[in-house]
Image 1 (cartoon, rainbow, N blue to C red):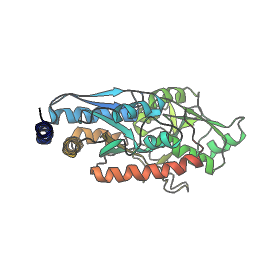
Image 2: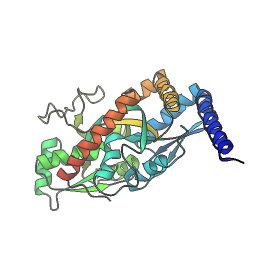
Image 3: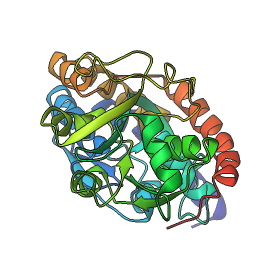
Image 4: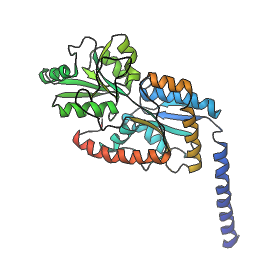
Length: 324
């Protein structure tokens, strides 16, 4: 075979590949999709990912499963998606702040921005300052005063290093000069178990994971990070009311594909999950959980990921974040 013929065959093969790409995108999805979640089952990321998976499965006509791949505060799942085949069938559901925290606080097995193709935001998270029902603290001020007198300070439970609740709580404690020890868990469920039994003094869990415990009086709410008071907790003040103002900690959760996923595939994934966000049952359940739906274009999400990465590098220095 001459070099000229061989070159023509290579060029022909490349042309066929380019022609085949739109066909694959046009047929998407034609097999099951996996959503990877880097935290334990039962937490806000897991619960909402499963609600989206159910709604999107009905629309796309393919089974969408959620796989909890824990480890490194979510880094194991992020690395797995970054290294997956960029075909739209392995996706990551993640917290923007936590995703950026891991590499900002030490070595991480993934690139927080360049390693992914952004798809869309999924929802926002509202968190609440909660203490065990038998805690002596009845207000946020009383909790902080307790921390200043308790040997070793307060024990602060979080659902994971770099989660919005971790960053929010740490910022406030440092600003108020309250001594504390942080205890990181692999998700909201194990953290809630220790909070209820008093193994940790307080946490900032999401409304989704704490609402039933608050209703059953197993926990007491002291404050809310939200624009306004939440109807089921009318007596609980917002941070703004308490004088802390609007906190600059990203609380958005989103969907991403591996880097180099073809734009046509990203568009298909985007359309599928944005349509899923309009499902009446999904919208109702997310609103009740205190996790209002939030969607975006891939470009808007990409800009948010870049901004969060820049902000987190500075915040990691301020909070002296270290990998766990």
